[in-house]
Image (cartoon, rainbow, N blue to C red; front, side, top):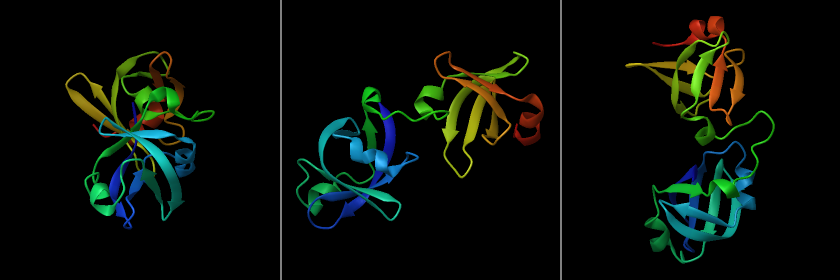
Length: 163
């Protein structure tokens, strides 16, 4: 499953929900036929985009009261139904658990978390400590989700890492 958003609140009186998208492009929701809210499957009846949010009409959610019960739930999709992220783009779920290496091949640790922000913040577990660094240009020099490897430039990494 891929976590692609969170239900913020009901929208209107006809059961529509307002979702905060965790995708780069909110338009990706338009290609979906179903979502899972905390594991419960819902067929998508309608999708609108606006105000930095996605508005979904779901089968079985007929009014505001039913939509209110969905507030705060995780919006997920099956991995195999996810749209292609595009060249040089990756899903967070595909990167988590990757071994983080310096360009010399020296192992730094394991990627355990990515916090989404203007510049994503990566957290690496190196033994007993955690190291945070921004995913800014020049720091990450190679990514291989298939091999579960992430390569960083030592000089640039050392300039921005928080130990």
